[in-house]
Every structure is written in structure tokens, then in C-alpha cells.
Length: 150
Image (cartoon, rainbow, N blue to C red):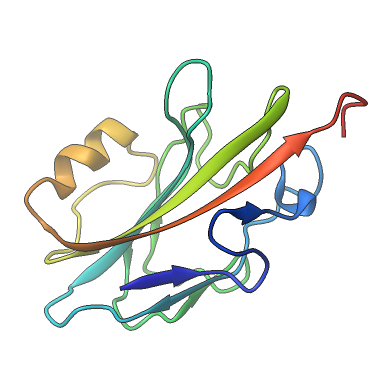
């Protein structure tokens, strides 16, 4: 399974427009090679360089397995969105407090749909997917906050 974006390469620089300090724009993501037997997809966006440890910026689940593209305008209606570590339901783009931070999108192919309500926490999500992950794919990108602020 593969996860990619037409806006940045794996390990590359993410557009500043995706940051919460700019347009707070969910990037377009392409999904390829979903394994047979997948009942749903789930996606997490996390900051790997947060001073408090991994910080969840967005999580969503129950995305149909035949979904080939995700973006802010085409999130499937069946998808459910959870609570970020900022206490917000919905997307909160990268926003490093200072310097360069790396952000990771993790796509999960699951053998079930999750019975979680909108706004469920990352902890509840992690417990719900335990034992149901068929495959994963990752995409990382970095954003740097300049000394001037943005």
C-alpha cells in the first residue's frame, strides 16, 4: 500500500499553505495498492518533533477502501473524524512553535469498520484498531517556522 501527495515528496518540504498559521489546508493525498480484504481505511497526522512527544493533529476512520484520493474537498461522507491532541474535531495543520518539525501521515488498512463516535480520542482509536491492521503506509514531510513568525 502506498500513500503519496502531489504537493510534496516523502521526506520533503510541505507547502506552508498547509500550516495552521497559513491556510490550514489538508493536503491532497493519493492512496494506491490497498490490500484485498480491507474493510476500511484510517488516517492519522502527527507531529514527530513536538516537545511533548508525538502530537496528533488529525485522525479519521471508516474511509471506504476504494478511496483513491483524500483532500479537504473530497473526504468521503462515511468517514468519521476524531479529536486532535489540541481538543479539536477536524484538521489542524502543521504549526511548529519554532524551527523545523517533521509530520507523518499514517494510513491504516483495516479488516473492519470502527465503531467509534465522531470526536473519539487517539487513545480510543489506537485501542479500536489493535488487532485489525492489515497494512500501513506512511508519508512524511517537514515544515519550518521562520524566525519572523511565518
